[in-house]
Length: 65
Image (cartoon, rainbow, N blue to C red):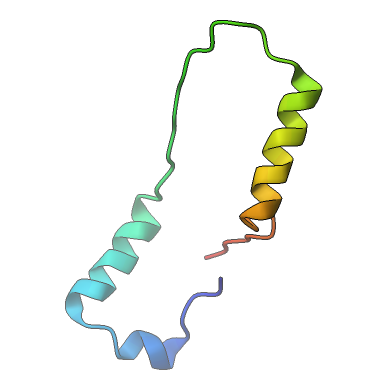
């Protein structure tokens, strides 16, 4: 998703501009950890993850400053 251009940035209020600046300084990187009791079947895991990402259209996401 492209960043708003100068015309849009000028319409942001003080709080919105500060949140954009905060995002530049401290990007959000979510991390989740879980423990699974049994060994995973790697090919099956990859296929399931790929199917979920494709269904959610997340594989097509690209973010650039």
